[in-house]
Image 1 (cartoon, helix red, strand yellow):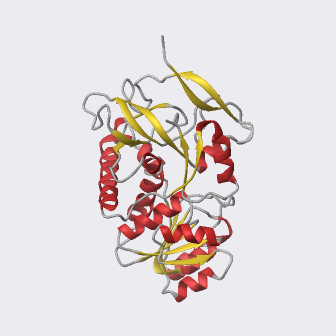
Image 2 (cartoon, helix red, strand yellow; image 1 turned 90 degrees about the horizontal axis):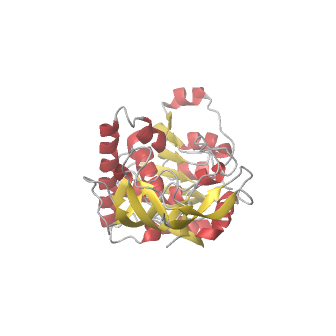
Image 3 (spheres, rainbow, N blue to C red; image 1 turned 60 degrees about the vertical axis):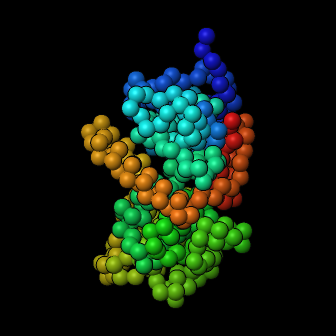
Length: 338
């Protein structure tokens, strides 16, 4: 008889208040769509909650699984089983990116997207390690070409990906300017290592320029801040677009780019890593390993230590998503599963 597990499904596209349902499902088989016939089976201890899951409750995310489905792209837990040749072994503590299915007691992830969880981090921190920190490294180092000694301005700096960007920037030898909206969020940004903290409701663009200007802007917010983010850049600066949690998708007046020799670049970590899967898998796996190694060094040097905000039991997944929707979240929001 197949064992059952608790899981949260999205059953309709009506928003977090009504879209989610706690159910019992058969435990998944040791196979994953990216690696058919094999996968790492993980007893989940904590699952990360992110903005894409909120969008999925309304059918607004680019990935639209057939209803009903179990959301949740990142987990931390203990390996139950792993395919031959995988780096992970039964009993190992891991952080993993299953893509979906993470809001459950058992999840399956591809071996290349399953990483050893350093002893310095607990399971809650592990649940915030992959999506946010791999994105931050990809955005800052790969797409933003960040160099030691440069200055990074981080929008939405108290959220999960914002705190990750502050820590990764510091690990890369940059100085950091955080933009936040409240005193409470300033505390979080400073805990994440921000060198300077500015208020989103104040003249932050002018204040950033008084601090010497900005070489790279890390922007997961978009909306009304975008133009002033461009104006804060030094000549040759780069604005890295990570997302649009502010709601509005801004437009670029390209004469600004011409006059100051600045760049606006996109940073879609998921599309970069997964877009080449099947045609250039070896290179994508190599990049994942390179990023994981860089982050392990930053964890060992204490530059990276994921900041966990609110935690919710599995049955309160809707409340976790509503906290993100209200923009009241600080640090990484997690579900405590096992």
